[in-house]
Length: 253
Image (cartoon, rainbow, N blue to C red; front, side, top):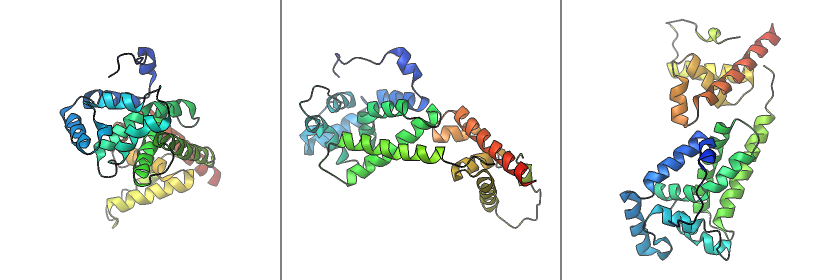
């Protein structure tokens, strides 16, 4: 890797969202791993654009700032994307290449808290990477990934801000205690999710968060770990949803 490239200051690194810190830490292990070095060696047999000894060298070339054109710089990313349809490792490499742009998006977008913004941006970028891998075009791939990720996330942010805030008592009405209830646990959970969603006027994921953590016995920490977000992010989201449910119930009395 080019030792002249400036490293991210420690203070800035500490301020990154938890998901970004995890991705950077994961890459530090993956970049020089036998798995990736062997895969690069295999790729290079068919494509000299991927002839790099390790992941850091590849990413440095793909992020080169003094390239004469985007097309010259993006030749590496383009080669990676050609393998990303059927290769999860190629998608991970592509994500690392565009990560600086994603970090900029996370800082610049307004809406949600920083951990949720990070989760949404990264998840959207992975979808866009898969899409770009199957839909080649004449525009540079780094621009396409950034522009399409930004557009999709901004649309989601606008939809989230326009969600009606009308709305919630506690969740005790959920617990009927009826052991003769013929519905399966899954059906009961889905019905409760519908109940919360309709009264709080929120998306399914927010309603399901309330039901799973208040009724189904799943901890916030377990969900946060599965979604790779900060537990406090989920607690704040749950609190907002429950407030809406209390408001809704108060309005109907």
